[in-house]
Amino acid sequence: MKQAVEQEVNKIYCENCIDTMARMPSEFIDLTVTSPPYDNLRTYNGYSFDFEKVASELFRVTKRGGVVVWVVADATIDGSETGTSFKQALYFKSIGFNIGDTMIWRKSNPFNWGSNYYYPQCFEYMFVLCKGTPTRFNLMRDRAIINAGKQFYQTRRGTDDRMEYDNKKVTLAEVGKRYNVWDIAVESQPEHPAPFPKQLASDHIISWSNAGDLVYDPFMGSGTTAAMAVRNERNFIGSEISQEYCDIANERVRRECARPRQMNLGYEQESNLARGTTAADGEGRRGMMNE
Ligand SMILES: C[S@@+](CC[C@H](N)C(=O)[O-])C[C@H]1O[C@@H](n2cnc3c(N)ncnc32)[C@H](O)[C@@H]1O
Image (spheres, helix red, strand yellow):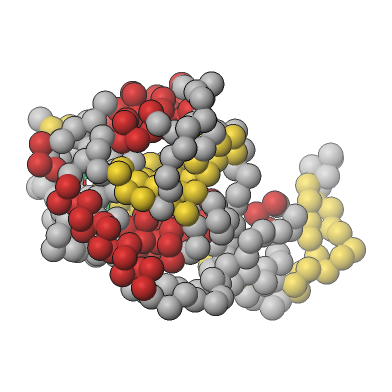
């Protein structure tokens, strides 16, 4: 295990993320939310990264029970999708991460019109990788339940394969856990070619960390993860190799810190449903956060 060194947090380091992580002690980060440059789709001023080194460092610096949200898509090269996203997910698994979930970010306003042969691309993968089982899971509960308020008897399949009915009546809640396909609009930004939508970063931060936790983005770009960590009262740390993007990210964090803090974050710290107690309850609530 690496020696613990002082690593200043709430700071974006303008350098290769490998150098930032090399200074971190092991088991340091609660949550990483990031989108790496993929398949050389954009050159980002010519910077590149060593995927396998980044993956193994992420495994080392993530706390047991911590999560890495890895948002990627594939380029199409010579008539075929590269499959890089799945190769990366499987590599993460081979070094010890669980692929907890393969989530989809469906872009509600995709800019891609596709080719003559295939349907237009409108999503990216969001691999939720966990070092063990998540210790934080404040799952979003904003899915309206059809038949909300109706009562029914819970059923289960008996050993003889017949349906058994519980005596206890259950009332269907107003809202249930969100599904793992998230519809979120792309947010264009003049200063960066591929920023996260704020809601994407914010919802993952709320889902997989608690207030006061440390959130990392090794490919910070325009600073969305850092700004949303501040908004949700988490600490952050970031790496971004381009000085131009670092300046943009720092300015966004400065603006976010200047915003009046929201008293009610609008999420449950712990969700009974997330622990799988019952499928029918649901007092969960959350607030939308707009910049
Ligand atoms: C897909 S963008 C991230 C966008 C970000 N999620 C946002 O909301 O703006 C990837 C970023 O990684 C940066 N980058 C590329 N190689 C890097 C490296 N080795 N270390 C740190 N940053 C790097 C690029 O400059 C680019 O800004």
